[in-house]
Length: 249
Image (cartoon, rainbow, N blue to C red; front, side):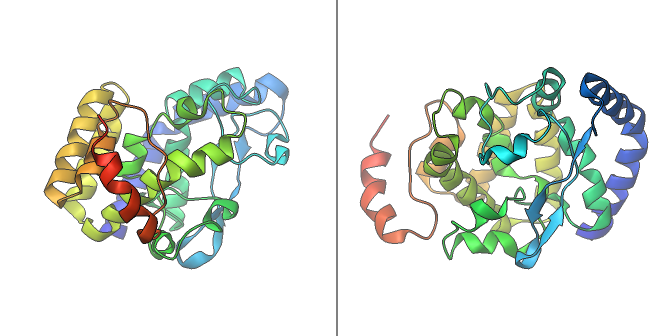
């Protein structure tokens, strides 16, 4: 049922959005007369890889800089690229990957191999399902670029304060997913574009339904800065740190 739903939405979505996507592609091409698309390798279900379609939001050859994480003030981002990133236009293009079967509408966001190589044994479960366009982590940490803004080492900061929480939210989704949850998350993703607070409240309700722990629920409210935290699977460190973190307000 999930795959049939993915196919139906991808077909209809691409048909409806094609004039808008074509206009964005032309605008990107006109800024430097280079390809408007960027098709990087991402980790696929089972540990393989696939080419994920994106609009090119950076200058040519930006991917050769050796930096995987992108801060909001990254100088490599083009003016049109900032618009594309701000309004998640990239994710509409990825309906093509959904149509091909590389991705699903809802699932953990696909990762670059360099990030997946750092996964703990627990995080490796993220590769047991099709990666997706959205999931709870995509909604809660939709402002990843802003979190990394100003960092001298965005990759390090990503692994310290973003990856641990994204992985926990995505793993929880894998354990609790069903068709009804997917519909709620798709709706909340769209809502997040115009009413982020309402979208976060919706995710919190889902986490309560799932019986998520207090620390994860508190983080998902995004009312305070993200805390550095060990990734899932580092259980001995988590047990040591959790009591102290839970008392911080």
